Amino acid sequence: MTRAVDADRRAEIERLEDENAALRLRIDDLEAALYRPDLLIPDAWGLTKRQRDLFGALIASGPAVLTREAAMSALYAGRDWPECGKILDVLICHVRRKIAPDGFGIETAWGRGWRLDEATRAVFCRPAAASRDDAVRAASAAFGARRISGAAFARRMEACGAVAAPAAAGRSSPASAL
Image 1: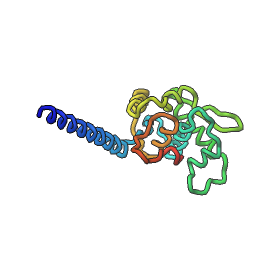
Image 2: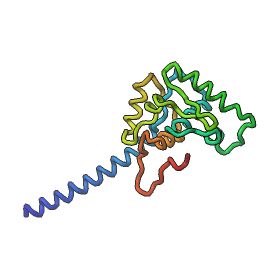
Image 3: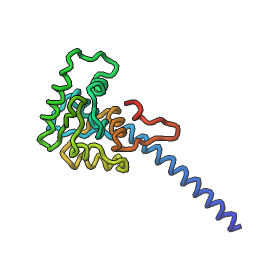
């Protein structure tokens, strides 16, 4: 009789452990929906929406060069681009000026585009092994910051390897939407 009770208890424990694991995954998914691993931007930077989008596109490109076409696509997805091609040069100039006091920078790859300098990538493009919480903590520790919401940034952070998006089986990665 005790063997039957022990077997029943073990089966119940296994069932509860499985249920617990499933509930933890569900909690992770719900937290991800509520608290995206958003870009932490210092209030002192005062970036406009377009400037934040451009900065996010630079982060998404990681160590690769962000081409003019890719930047325009990130800024004006689904809309007509402005005819003036200098808008990117002006935006880059403004972003550089605003992030420089904190020691961050944007490099120019002449004739090709731009990329974040190594120090900036070290803060914003964490290795793939870093968790979402680690990426947020590291960026928060780098400077006083506020959350800027947006699913697009979550995809960009995932694309540059900063976080692994919580995904249930059968769900596609949001990085493919970039």
